[in-house]
Structure formats: C-alpha cells, structure tokens
Length: 228
Image (tube, rainbow, N blue to C red; front, side, top):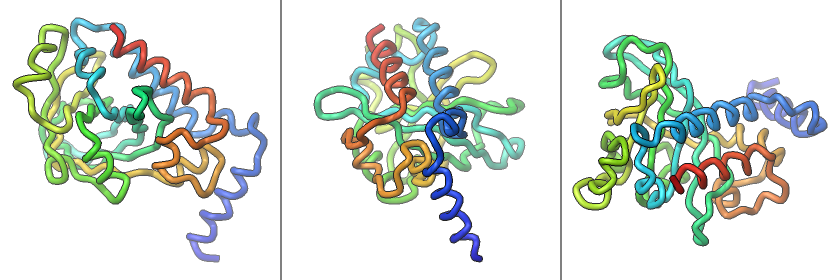
C-alpha cells in the first residue's frame, strides 16, 4: 500500500469518528493556540497591533509556535490559520496554513515565535489559495507598526501589502519576513471541518454547514480586538 493511500485511509477513518472523539484533534489544539495569541494581543493595546490596521485588514494569518531549526541562517516551520474579510465586513471561518523558511532577521535565541501577518489586500490571499506563496516575492511585506501611536501612519506612510509581527517572551514587535513561504494545508481543513471536498474559497464564503465552535470563538475574538 502506497504512502498516499495510507494517508487517504487515515483521513477517511478520522472523518468517520464521532465528534466527541475528535474534540482534541491537532487542529482543535492549534485553534486553542491561535486564540491564545489573539487574546494576548488584546491585552496590550498600547504595545500591540494597532486596532485601526486590523479594522482595515482584508485578512489575518496567525501562526503560533513557529519553531527555529537553525541559528542566524537556518529554517523555521509552523502551522496556523488564515481568516479573511467577507463582503459584509465579517470574518470568515479559518483555513489552515503553514509557514516555512525566512529565519534571517527573526529573534535569534528564541525557541519558538508566534507570527501574525496582516493582509491589506486580497491579492496576496488569492495567490496563496492558488499555490505556495512567498513573502516579499509574491507580495510586499514589511515589519508592522506597533501601538496606538503608530495608528496614524498605517493609512499614509506604510504602503506594504502585508505587515508582519512576532511575539517572543510576551512581547510583540514588527519583524522582517522576506523569503518565508505560506501554503494552504488542505488536509488539516478536511480534518477540522470533517469534509473531503471543501475548498478554501468555500470556507471563506461561509459554505461550511456546521463549523466547529472554535471557529466562531476565533471570529468573536477578532471582532473584539479590532474594536479596541
């Protein structure tokens, strides 16, 4: 039996299990980590991501515990989620993503780092849905402004498509992420929503009949955060 068939068999088995058995899946655990990061941002509005930037965002990727596998020059890997702004102004259900590479310029010495990417347009999001997406190559990325005092600059002086942030040891800061690659994780989406044939576009559009409660929890946290 090939590795590909084994993966399909395991995925099918997981999708047939009762919801109670799936309560502690890797995907649910990852949503817990994502919400902890969002909650941490909300607790430090004077030193976190400017709420005005979030209110004008078309998408947000939240990737907890990005692990360093080298020193100054090496690699990084982590998984998280991406949510996008719907036409009615609400936030979508999450789509799972992974990030790889881009270690130069990150906090050296940290064992893991939380990464947040704020998308100011849908162009980068659309490219990510179609294929693997590289920050700096497929869309301009810059270290994001921090704190309420930076709010005025977000609409005038800053022109990047994506603003990047990191959290290490409880502190948020803008961070350079040129060269890091983002990719949609369709297998994680299938396990989280218990559906083989969902596309990222369907998830973003709200076509999931009964999304997990954690998806609504994340949306509520984001609404609270951008309203500060």
